[in-house]
Image (cartoon, rainbow, N blue to C red; front, top):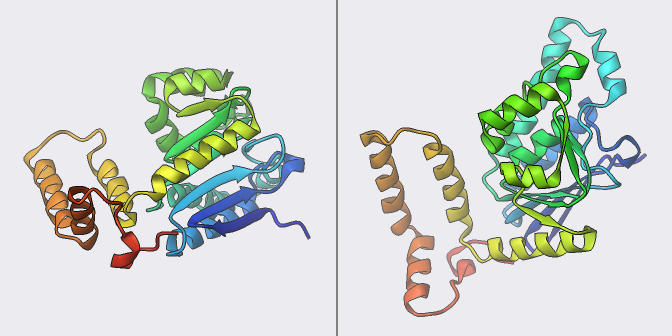
Length: 267
């Protein structure tokens, strides 16, 4: 039986691969459950420093599987809500994962596939990848993915692309901020992802998690006395941490920090 989610851990990098190329890696309840489990496993594994989300075949992810949607049309309200909550929880797990996440986008990403891309911290895509938020064309809305997509591209762009359901190019996705880097082909895609991984692995593991928490805490928030105090408390705590002391001392001594010496996996 084909494994629809493949996982691999190599030298500190956890790779999660959607492996349903024959249906363009489209979601169904089984894939959503498997992907949630894979993300949670990678998040908890101390051997994993960085997570790469990839797909097999020509498409990154085509959104919801048509056969699943056909079945869902006959579900009760309770069954539909259960499925929607499972999808929303998977997206939350990916977006709030404490470890850096990279989307390796080798082909089209539609609907929920755009949601996966938006949930990742860093996105690299090939030039000929295409994107779309086509939900309104079949009478629904991009509800569960909307917090992440709107955060990535902004309300103004969301108004156009969620309402028109038109396809947009990787170049447009890059200009909107959905994609961070564009490359020519799969070989260049792997090189670009590899370079980003190398940069991430140089950094303190706990500090990376704290940095993700910091971004979530301050993004789009008003600068209030409480926010200022929160940021002061964060830097105070990290300066006194084992990682903070090692990092600052290594900088002063002009050497590479030894994260392994303080108990952090550095592979």
